[in-house]
Image 1: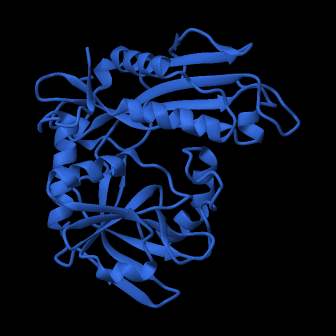
Image 2 (image 1 turned 60 degrees about the vertical axis):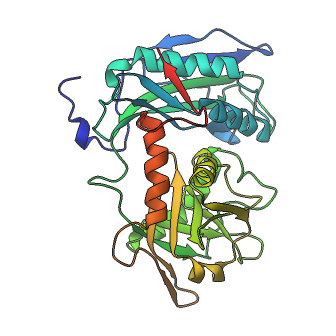
Image 3 (image 1 turned 90 degrees about the horizontal axis):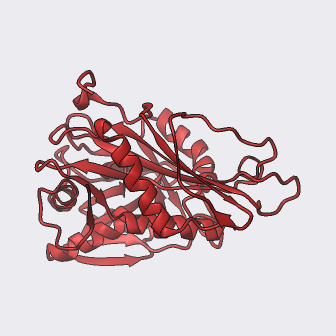
Length: 339
């Protein structure tokens, strides 16, 4: 891939050589199949199209300085994938097959793994959807699994930099007892109106509040929120936010650095008490927040006052990214080497 400008890759889709597919029919999963096409043939009455039976995951493969390819916490992605399938009544994709599919798709597309030092990585997207035909509202009897990869550039070109966020009370992403805790496409569709409103106003994303009372912080666009105060990493506990693997990892990293951690309800008013704030997820790892604007209350919460990410945020970011690329010892056992 000598023609690719690795350091200037967008965070978007690029066709690679192969993807892996698998089909659930007659009550069982078949064998993994290799495909070179980036299109799918889907029945016009598939439940994935009509009734939202669709879930996905996002993880990355990283090229280390030692030439070894690393997967980060794939087991957690497999577990969440199964959890999402249960949540919208789809057939679970087996963990063993998940590992085999992810490993094979990385091996088959090895030439697309960005080199160490480019800041880029190979994004891996497992997908599961109802492919069986149903006109009535009920779960499908057939399902399709696909995993594809694409090289992606760093989320922040030119280094990690703080962004502005907008608190939005006009829209809800998900309700308690709903599907917010699952990684399903419907949650992202539900966030688009608020997200576009924020972007049109010059903000990076929206901060959603809890749908029931509009009192507590929920999700931060497509990511989890965290705040720092008194040497403590604080992140929301909610019935309607996604279980972020990055957030879970940052909690462990914080503990290893002597930073206390709390997962609990975070009232909007507490935003004024944080010295640092950020959003965390697979794409950016951490997006430091410069300002949170609350137009309904005529409030602006400022962080990163010198225009740079805070010291605790950077400490967390550097250690987690260091583990992912193999530059920092993996004391947690999170890394799997792809031979």
